[in-house]
Length: 114
Image (cartoon, rainbow, N blue to C red; front, side, top):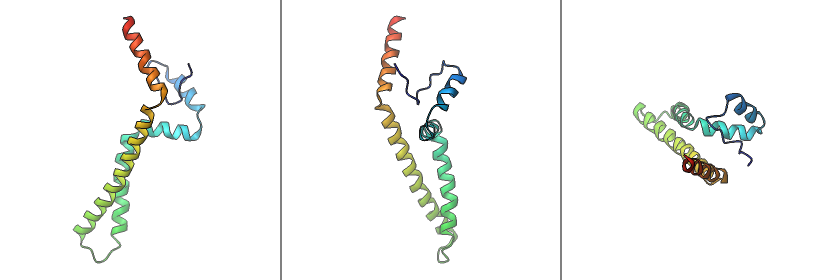
């Protein structure tokens, strides 16, 4: 059974996982990193988009300071929501991969042996 490049077992030594990750293409490494860091990515997206949107909204001379903060927050929330939805879609796509069901089957069989 060939293992997916995204599958990493906790009981395998770190150097084997590193060797397998070196065999992945750049896009596979990027997706693997996104899967591992998805919550940090969502938080960083909100922080960065809050700063960027505040700079963008700050150029409008007709808005008060409070209005600028609210507008920046709304834009940042919209971008963060888009990132969270795309991360959820990525997670759902991972759950439909066949190696997940093979892993679940292997766990069921090992539980039955004990």
